[in-house]
Image 1 (cartoon, rainbow, N blue to C red):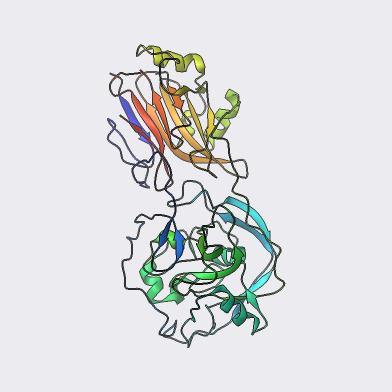
Image 2: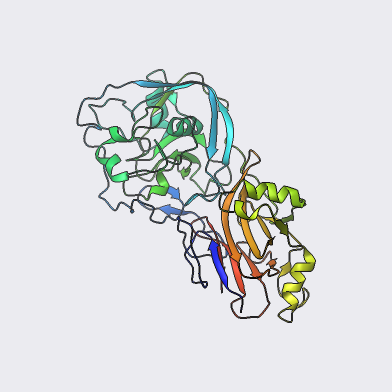
Length: 415
C-alpha cells in the first residue's frame, strides 16, 4: 500500500505518518453549525472553542467599580479617514463566514470615538443600559452619537487586519484585570472586553434572528476569545429583554456606511487556470511553494484512473467526480479552491483560500509520497461541508475527506 508522508492540514489526524500545522481545529461536521443564543446576554454568538490562552471561565465582571485603579486621562481618540479591512480572514478560528466579510476594504470617513465606554470617565464604572434607544439618547445629550459598527471595528484594528484589539492575540484575563494593558492599536480602551457594546446599526438579514435585529460588538469576560475578535458581530434585541450592554459615543458626521455583502457563492464551480497560473499561485503559499515549479493539476482522465484502480467508475460512485480543480463553498459566504496534481514524484491535494486582493493563502494540504498517485476528488450537494478523495476507490487507507469543521477550518484527513 502507498505510504502517505504528511498532511499539512489544520488538525492532527491518525493518517499514517502525518504532521499537522500549528493551529488545531475541531472534528469535521458535514454542515456548519447554526448560531446559538447566549442565555445570559441575549447576544447571538457562534459556538466557541478554546483558543490560546485557555478559555477564561471567570465570574462575570460587572461595572460596579472604576475601569482603572490608577488615574488615566479620559479623552476622545481621533481616527482619520482610511480603509478598514472588514471582517475576518478565511480560516480564522471561529470565524462566521455567513455574517463576516473576507477582510474586504471599506473606506471609513474620519471620526472621533470615546476612549472608554460611556461615561468615558476612568473614575467611574461603565454604564450599562438595557436598550439601544437609551444609549442613543445618552450620546445625543452630549452632542454626540452612537458609533457605527464599522467605526467600532476600525477603532479595534486601525489600519491592520489583526483579529483582536491591539494585536494578533488577546490575554483576556489580563485585559479584564487591567484594561490599560489592552488598548487597541489606535489607543481605545476596553473595546468589548468586559461587556458587549451597542452600535447604531441594524443587523442584515443573515445576522438578524427574530427580534434580535441590532448589531452589538465585543463580549463579556466569561465569553470565549472568539466573542472578542474585532470582526465578531452579534445580533441583539434593540428593545432589550436580555442583559444590559455597554456603549460608547462617536463624533463627526454620521457615516453613510453599509456592512459589505458577504456574498452568495455557488456551491461548486470549475476553475479554468492553466499550469503556469497554478504554479504561480502555489509559489506564493509558503506551505506549498516547494511543489510549485513542477506542479501539474490532475484532469478528469487522471481522476477516473484513481477510481478504476479500485474497480469503480464515475457512474458507480454515489458522489460527483470533479473533472479538475474547482471552487467549493462549504458554507454561505466562504469559498476555498481545491486542486489535486503531481509534482515530480509526489502527488498533492491542496485547499487554498482566495483573498479579495487576488492573493491566496493555505487552508490545508495532503502529500502522497514515494510514487505519483492519481487523485480523484468528489462532491455532492447533499453534503455541502464535506468532499471525498481517493487514490484507489475501496482500497483500504487510500481514501479520505476534505471537511469544513465546527471551528470554521478546512481539514484533510485519511481514512
